[in-house]
Image (cartoon, rainbow, N blue to C red; front, side):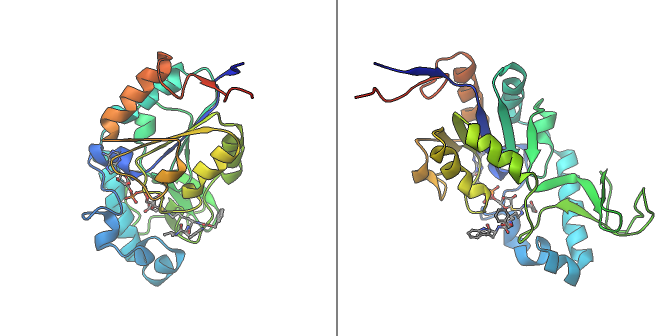
Length: 250
Ligand code: BV8
């Protein structure tokens, strides 16, 4: 006897690949960010302590790139999904750009921080920031010149991990978009979701390091794959969603 239960709770994980078609560089491609900026120099607390000017310049450039970028059809399709999906939905992004929000999404969680936010390490406050930090501006609250990019660097704890683990434990469907699966704890989310019974789907330009862990992988540009998948989901005609058949009981 087939047991059908409605697909309600979705967790989406996105990476740099979803913003590639908006002109923002990914990290590991041959023209990737890590090619000409050694990660340990620009994305670690030790690198910031050693050469804060270098790190501030790196993120001042990233912030300007983000402000100049525009959401692409993948971001807009997820904005539509957020507006129309009546079940639980959490978009966990590793990206520091705000293209999900400019694409209309609201249920977004930036686990690695945001380019348009500055963190005062003197008074531990955060401030929307679209200017430069390289000239050592004063904190709007305490006046100290102790502002750093509000970014999670390697060796630092990603943001709001409890909320993410909660959502993974409740997910019926986990979808990974535009990520290489090279960085943890994000790269481990597919296993956590699967361990709680979720179906898992990967939408990526090429197979990621964790592809074998997914029930289904679709290869292609996010700007094509994501709008097609959202249409399927909202029209109820896609394979893994909206209603998922449990394996027939013996
Ligand atoms: C932590 C902010 C303790 C900065 C970033 C377990 C095993 C091994 C190592 C570790 C481990 N646990 C922890 C570690 C250490 C480390 C880690 O993972 N190291 C790696 C290198 C092995 N992790 C940490 O330090 C993390 N902190 O662990 O704290 C802890 C432990 C447990 C639980 C809680 C805490 C902190 C990591 C965060 C560092 N900050 N970003 C910045 O942005 O400058 S990471 C940064 O790199 C991104 O945010 C992202 O996470 C990662 C880049 O990956 P992607 O986004 O996937 O980008 P990439 O270029 O690699 O791939 C792009 C993909 O898109 C490709 O697959 C490509 O095919 C595809 N694509 C391209 N174009 C398109 C496309 N797809 C579709 N359409 C297209 N058009």
